Image 1: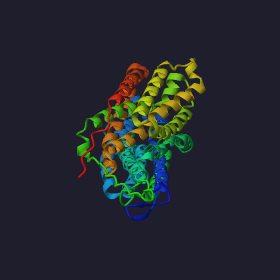
Image 2: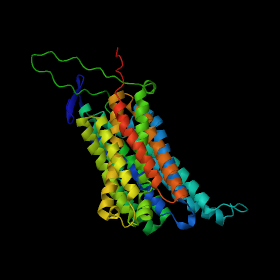
Image 3: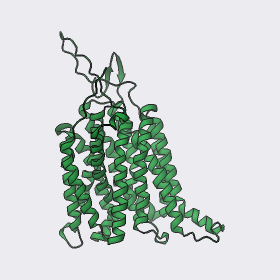
Image 4: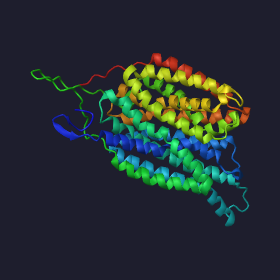
Length: 444
């Protein structure tokens, strides 16, 4: 079978939907990547809401954590019921979550005007914060998890193992590059219509878009074979037997825990910058056009996913992981020195650093699903990668909330957060040398 057009799986000729599914999945991620615009959304929070830096970290941190935890049941549902149903549910939840968050200030105003808070000291900070925790953090975070879990598995199943890294990179690139359009769009909408109205408009739009795109997702009815045709006059080689780990079997391997920790470090280091880039640029460097750097980071994020996937198909996943971990450690070191009136504060350098931070982070999002598929097979890929992906959410929660939010409020800067992330990245680069594929299961 070839990677496009018509090919044969077994004795029956089937139509290959590989590229249609790949680009539909990428487009879904392009919408779900609204998560990465939180640095713009939080930066533009109305001053009269009274949110501090820790408050502004909570909805994003909760969304990352819920996103990752939902990937486990979502992956199981995707394996069992197919990607369309699960992605449709994801679009519905993302839209409803954004709509609910957008109405938080209106709920407060309604309560005030109708005496619902009479005798209670209920500040607008509490109502709006809880609105975003539930709407953006819980509902939208869960929706992103359902949508994201349904994107990569059906796409990679249409292609041979030689293209796993490339296809995974293309699909997840949509999520990474989304701030290129979403950040300036959100900034413009907020300035034109106000904060709450902008979030409402985006919620309605993405609800419709994701649910429509979900209908284009389709996985092969049965595993496809990509064996080279036998030469005339020779006996065809016996078909290869796939070795697939169940989630419980995967959790018994030491490789899973090494992968989980490395993903925690690599993803967390990137997410803590993504969550605060616009604010960091303004407070630490004096650069006021933070949305521009968010867009540059997004370009690097999307490109890094595709490049890392392609490189890993050539030189191996472990070597590629080590390379990107080391590059990200260098970027963290540069961030400790980036201050107003230094050479690192020049706009060209800020663009380069932002793009590199995005690319190094984005590499994780194509390399770890590819490694999971390589190590544990395709049959249970959705749920297996869901377990691996929980590290992404925990990393984002811990580093973006506890490190960036708390350290900024306590010490007045982000320097210690950079150093901690640097140490974790160096450790992860070392751990790549210890990761080996699990022993192959005996197939009856």
